[in-house]
Image (cartoon, rainbow, N blue to C red; front, side, top):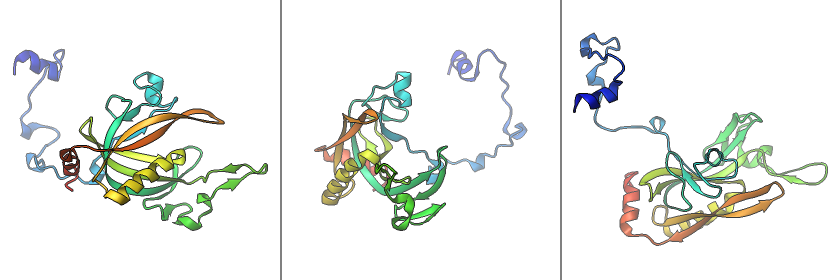
Amino acid sequence: MSDTNFDKMVGSDQETELVPVEESQASVQLANFSNSVNFGSEDLVIPRIKLAQQMTAEVVEGSAKFGQWILTSYDAADELTVVPLLFARNRTLRDDAGVVLCRSNDGLYGEGDPGGECAKCPMTQWRENASGANFPPPCVFSYNYICYVVEHGAMGMLEFKRTSLNAGKTVNTIAAQRGIGNFALKLKSTQSKSKKGTYASPVVQPIVVDPEVLATAKSFLGL
C-alpha cells in the first residue's frame, strides 16, 4: 500500500504513531479475537423491509419515493423479490410517547404491563367511542418474516400490521401450501385511500424463480 493511501486511511493532517501492542493503553489481547464468525441474535441488527409512505423519513429527505420499497441501507426500488425464510406473530403495546409497555413474541402471551394471555386482554380488543365509531386495538398485532432480498443479496425483516394484515395472510396461505422457504414473492404497491388521506398498500405476488435462488436464500440461515 502506498504512503498516500495509508495517509488517507488514518488522516493525513495528523501525525500517526504506531504503538506496539504491549504499550497500547487499551491493552488489546489478540487472543481475544477470532476469525470464526459465531454471532448470536443479540449481536446482529436485521435491516427492515418497509413500504415508503408520504411521511417516511427517506421520502421526506428525497432518497425514496412514495410507494417504493426500502431495505435499510440500500437504494429504494419500485419492486423487490424476497424469499420468506422464518415466520413469527407479534403484539406490541406502546404508550403515547412510543415506549413499549407490553410485548408478545408469539402473539399469544404478553410480557410487561398488562401482560398475560393476549386473547383475554382488553388492549387487544376493538373499541367504540360515544358516537359509535370503532377504533382498532391499542395493542398492535403483526405478521413478521425474515426474508432473503434477491436484488440486494441480503437479509431483511418484513412486517405486516394494521391495514396490511391481509397481505400477510396471503403470504401465510402460500407458506401453508408450499412450505416456508420454498417460494419467492414479488413485493409491489398500490395506492389506497382513507379518511386520513392516501397511503401505499403492499401487494404480494408469488413468482417462479430458479431453484438456485431458493438454495442461496436458505444458505444464509443454514437451512
